[in-house]
Length: 354
Image (cartoon, rainbow, N blue to C red; front, side, top):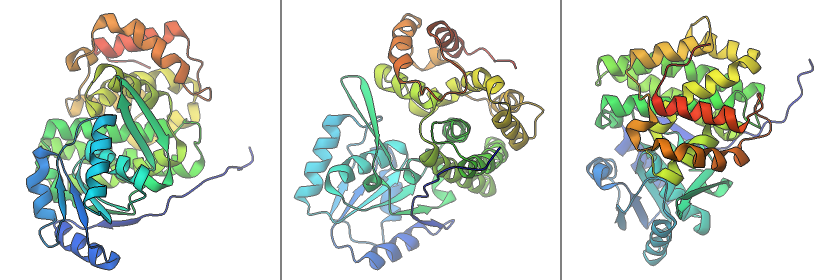
């Protein structure tokens, strides 16, 4: 088979600096010559954000953050940024915080410096998402790509072990979806493979010792690779399912990804043997599904959508919402009945077999 593909690489400044986030942020603000900074963080992480920003002058501190970025909150934040004369957005937190910064940048063109505290990966993509009337809309625009990322593994200590596992599996979902998403190519498959390896090694270490910095570093490294791969490959079947479920039923983002992922992998792997082999090798397992099942068992991963707010009676409606957005390039044809069975299994939390 000829090696022919088209790959786009997104340009970002990426700084890995354990214990040095405040120092790196100060230098980055100075380098950019920013004067009116809007600091964005959730109320739960404001103390971390204030510590990270302690060496810079902040014009506006903004904490009205919510999952899935409701449109009304995006509009309110945009107005606040304009009123403050903001010339730089600094977001400290997880995917919801980064998502709000992206919503502001989408209409204002303001640059973003992202300081992640989870493994969400949004900071390394040009994908934005907002929710209105229980429906999540996503899009791609280079203007929302943070221009600089500052990764400090010590900032993730605030993320409890359980949430770390869910967040890390969200990153793992980026890797696995990148193997067969519409824009999948050998470069993002290679990044995704290394991301799976790093995450599968880092997460059990965090589970065993939440203060294991090496484990946290591996997870952050894997999360970054996963997001870069995902930004190139695009949104595959797994992400289409999770975006619909999150927006329509207000399910928690990371836990939804963790519960759905093994079922999508089990569904697609037989139809994508080369990708499945790479996934298996990254896990160090005989089969891709075996590797993911072993990891999920080792870290006590979220398993059942029913535990996170999805009613069994909503499954048929969810099927109708998801089916039209499943990419036609998915390696296996997706029928209404197959999707219903997949969602029923994810709802119940059964362990898929190969």
